[in-house]
Amino acid sequence: MQTTRSRFLFSLLGCSLSLCLSSHGADPAPSSSTPLPKKESLHLYLLIGQSNMAGRGVVEEVDKKPHDRVLMFTKEQKWAPALDPLHFDKPIAGVGLGSTFGRVMADANPGVTIGLVPCAVGGTPLERWQKGKDLYEAALVRIKAAMKDGTLKGILWHQGENDSGDLEKSQTYAKRLAAMVNDWRKDLDAPNVPFVAGKLGEFLSETSKDGKPVHWKLVNEQIAQIPTLVKNSAVVDSSGLKHKGDVVHFDSASLREFGKRYAKAMQELQAKSR
Image 1: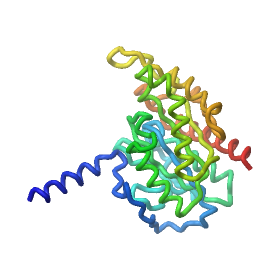
Image 2: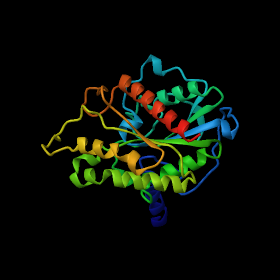
Image 3: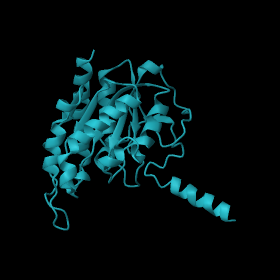
Image 4: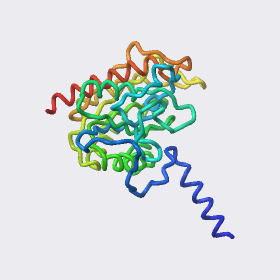
């Protein structure tokens, strides 16, 4: 009885990871009922970060029609037409920047299919995305599984709100992010894969609800340094984008615009490396 109970509790603990991947630590072959192109024609993009990458925008009519050449890698590691919410980190997941990014990339490359691999988790610090930490390792399992079907073409990152409440974390953000990118490239055997990061929303408050300083401007300054620290990388500006009313998350229209900006930056990096 005690052994059975212990196994049950361990099982619950294993599922407590935000990505809740039953495959964590394993590497099963993905399966899908969706027809796939040849491996070299399925261009994969890893989406990582916190809630503004996962998306909290309201799903509207424009978001309900899938593009015939944009797929998403589901929680179950299957390929399906990409529709918001792409992410599954929390029940409040909604419209994100990934779908528009995928559409723009597909339209610019008629001969390929875009495969989005969503792994972002809301409310998470950069530390949990560093090598050896839970979210890094869980996302690594997912992207490696997806790479059995396609070819990695880029990494998209949006995170920093969580770290902005801590001055030391804000001051060291660029150094820590650069180390993370280098680890991704090593672990995926992709030393030159393009990396695009987006700045935090300029609408964020400079003080928290309990009156403590929020250093989001400093984090943005750190993010802006990434192209000088990481080769083949770019930073996307967030100017003019609006929040959904909570002064934290981008609204749906802004996320679609953000997706376009990410796509433009990615295309420019890819053009340079040809």
